Image (cartoon, rainbow, N blue to C red; front, side, top):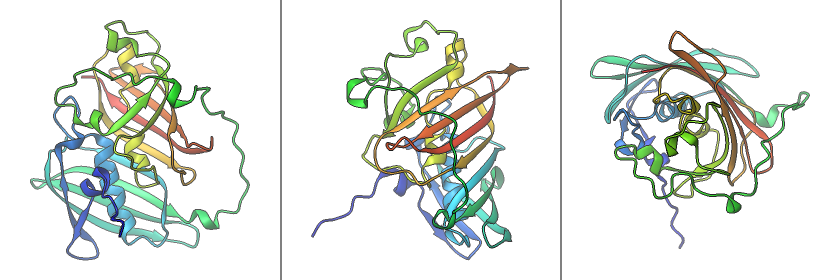
Length: 266
């Protein structure tokens, strides 16, 4: 009998419910960034899983998260409430707390993509990338002590980023392929994490990774198995705050997610 494999993402976003509106998550250090704190997209994905549990519709459509304090590996309490349930969409809100302090406020609207029968049109093209097997892993042979989130994801690029070679290019934009390193396939639940899983484009301006203040993601379709093609960019830096946009296409060439985050430089 074939046993199913539990991947790191599913294990580390598991929830223990003690009521219809309350649950606990065990945040792990497998998703840490250079700050020693868990990646914001990972926290967001845990929150989405909590919101999705008793939602009237199955598919997250749009999610907005406000990062109020850094998270830490360890237990986190999550309280969920329903805001509205409609025929096409339903909206829910959650608060994630550690040590009695709120670290994340997240609001999501859900729908059912099987019932989405309106007009579809895409005017943006998937990045022109060579097949992943023809490209290189930009982090191969690179030591990133403590940045455990880099072990959870694989990347393929035409050339290594300039910042990694000590020569930032001055162009804060990148295109690349991405997937989970342990073979887990992408789905709607994992896209909030994957939209925040790349090294920040701002590093090509010679900056250190920034702290996310808010992140919103629009989920456009359920991704199919395979690599994800990604395009990220920053266009404006003002007073130490900057945005980062991320578009994600699946292996069919279908746009499956768009995100924008506002972040603060250290």
